[in-house]
Image 1: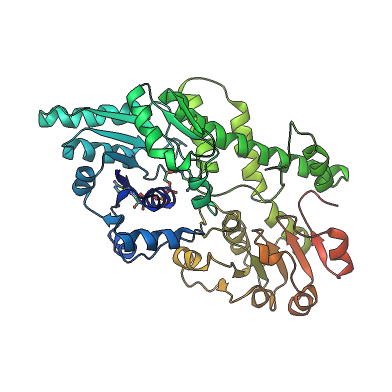
Image 2 (image 1 turned 60 degrees about the horizontal axis):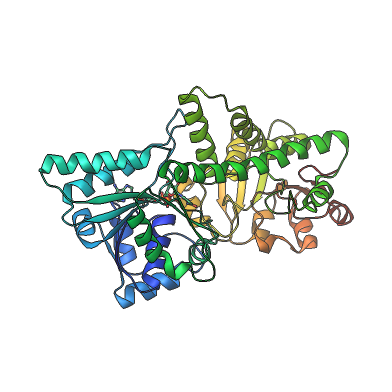
Length: 440
Ligand code: NAD
């Protein structure tokens, strides 16, 4: 099949590369000329496991190509995916500028019948808007070309994006057009062999399903974080509570880890966007506001715990930070708790020695060379001469470090663990002042 993917970020590039991997002819379009130039050389600009291999194979075989020319993209595909960003506006609403700009371009250049597939996370009613924009552009050109807009939200997780795309839990197709649904079934057939994962529904339901999934997950995290705070107050251990509730199959063990708050490019913005939608409809959604408020409070918790041991004024204090990415296996720093923490340390006059296994380049790009931030070669270099160590991301390599070496390197044996990766009793026996989330 001939497929065009507009937007080559985490979602677009994975979509394009996976569809090329199974034999399709894929043309990816992006307005970022530098990104396109690198991708043409099969150089993947983001850290995503398994992605470089399939991009290289795709480029080498000629099945995966890249361009900045939207007209070429529109001419190429029988299916055109829209996978551009939908960042949050000040008021929380999703910024649809990029999505609608692509719709306008499709309308301006379309020559043959096409299925336009919206993969970006967008509020209910956007498929309709995309439809209207394309139709208006065609009308302006005084041409009639049949097209269908299908809503197809993406559920992949950064850090496991290729695996998720290749073996999805479900493929949600939002359309009222039976013929388009069948074409979508054919498109996804290579990823739908084991059992039928296709769920066809109307477009508004498909659009809401994506937000519903993300706010459900964000709610689990915020509820656990709220319970963790309460556990500290009453003298309980949230890790024991977690195991106690996870044993109930109605609750389950997944996604109930307490921590220093959720980040990333999706949960924070999607919770806010759905809250905004509710407000637009004069519908009270107190749970959504609470999920966000609890998360904002939780993102302050590491700084509060640090202040509790080192005092309000951090001038002259050097803090080691392990993990900058918002979660393991990605270099994405968008809304990462580490950024809230570092801003707090700097506000109080302290400096940071940071280490992350893969997000250092992205951090350098964001922060540049600053006096109050040193990028370290390895986790131990970050500890060297630091007054405390704070763990922001639960990377595998932090799970069983050389505690003796760390004690020798740290100026004070203080660890604030935002991911509960160690046992408090063991840390005490290793000679650390250890503070975790919701643990005695
Ligand atoms: P991203 O910011 O990584 O990438 C977006 C890309 O679109 C960029 O490369 C940008 O240059 C390009 N772009 C913007 N406007 C364009 C235009 N007019 N024409 C061509 N290219 C254009 O974004 P992302 O993380 O891939 O997310 C894309 C969408 O998918 C968002 O709506 C997001 O909410 C959703 N989503 C993201 C994830 C995730 O884990 N990142 C998961 C599921 C859904």
